[in-house]
Length: 372
Ligand SMILES: [Fe+2]
Ligand SMILES: [Fe+2]
Image (cartoon, rainbow, N blue to C red):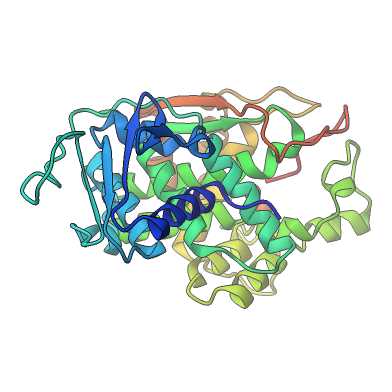
């Protein structure tokens, strides 16, 4: 099975540390340099250019270095870039005894964390994030595990992209091939859910939690056969019933694999339930859904409307916002829609067309993206 890119990078660097008592790694021109040699395996590692651009040109590893230290280090860098936009528990633990970093040539305890972060302007391809999302889905489907750490790393990285400029940026993936739909949609709903949570004044822990819930909201779709997901025509009754199982399946899969993701499980279960009781799963009595579910529901529908389908072009943002505003108070929570519209109108969009990844496969020519 393919390894997750962030895991692969971590493993390679940790292997390096294991063979060298005091490894020093430098990032020069997008290359990872160790003992004067370029490490070819890490040439495509996005983080090396991200680190170099914010002034982290050198990292020293002081054994023993655990995987948690490495992830924590990336979290520290993330906080420096976002200037505490997402203040994770791990990120608060500044200064890891086993990892030092700074500019090339800077030595000593006093300067090792004196990295100056000016305005960070980083062009994101979101390629690594997309690969990690595709890998998470494969893990859930194949190995039956839910890699929480990778999911949180993706969410942190997306948040980093959102805060890379002074104005809130919405880095949204644009569908190029149908098989990318689950990946692009999951990433977009996560970004939108975090932006909306921030607009609503939620705390950093909840912003991250809702970002993970957005990322995993359609996880139950891994149980739906590809030929049904990609069916160009109308569904039969049994196919529609199968499609409508994904909230229940997703919630079960999340809870069975990772008990700490209870909010994500609730969101997976409730994200198609409307304020007026419509949608699915259906209930005899009205159900007051979790706040996170109402929030993800709005982001979910918005992203689906703004995606190309064979029978219609993707809607423009304003058109999708008008749809949400028209249904506010009936299908969607009115306050959440108001906040979402403000977020969308006050943010700048960065639409990224995903380049070929190893997750891509040739789609049927007339395939259509599924419903949200
Ligand atoms: Fe969805
Ligand atoms: Fe869904």
